[in-house]
Length: 347
Image (tube, rainbow, N blue to C red; front, side, top):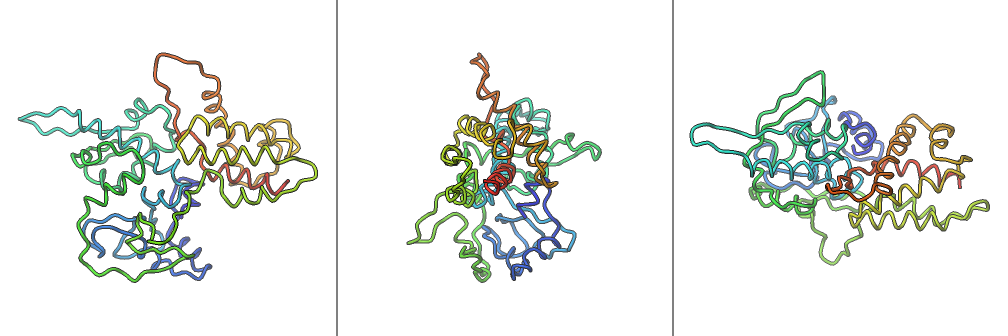
């Protein structure tokens, strides 16, 4: 489910998900129902889990979605799902805290893409287009009326509620999940049987915790760990890969530590360092001259556009106003991994 969303910004239809998992000899319906969930374990009652879907039944054309909580287990969703949501959540909390009140009139603050852009200039239009659906599935923002222009995905508004006040000082995905879980009612229904997929225990108890006696593995970095291993195993007769390996490792390390300035500089260095592998002198030539597939071409265009943000980090001088660059301005992990996948294959 995450792959199509990262590529096109839309969750795949259920028929696609069922088919993809069936080819791996997995029952999609059983699997999605076994994903960790707090609150009600039946088809009714408040709950929250790694996926949002109609618990009464899924039709072929339905589009189940992963929630912000899924980003805790799928870091590649961070830049397109969790980080934009958490940034906007903080804005909404501030609006709710500062909302005027009247002893004689009901008033509710609202949020719009224009207001978000004014407060968070670095957020992309694609993130703003995805936000209404994300807000619909997250507990702090489920309530309140919503309206939109069907002809313009950047024209919408959502009414805010006092539920947001419970989420003050939420700064990261782990704190957010813990806060949501603390407000969910205790489950009284029997739990579904535990399903083990690829060694991962998908019981509700593993929503955040690591089973006792099992060492917690380090979070996945920005670049796929499998690609890093492949890169380290390359012994190219034409190119020395030592610098590239170190740049990628430092990028992953800084990404895990939320050091976005370093991430911007390191990714820009990688894009400038690798064109000779493709027989080119510049990254623009890599994008234009190399034979890319349709999806990879989209990824490369995103990386090409990223260079402006990297220039901002590297060359903008100090000023009186606050800087607006953040981790959200990094390209999706899928784009970086697609580029490095081809790079590793050519070495």
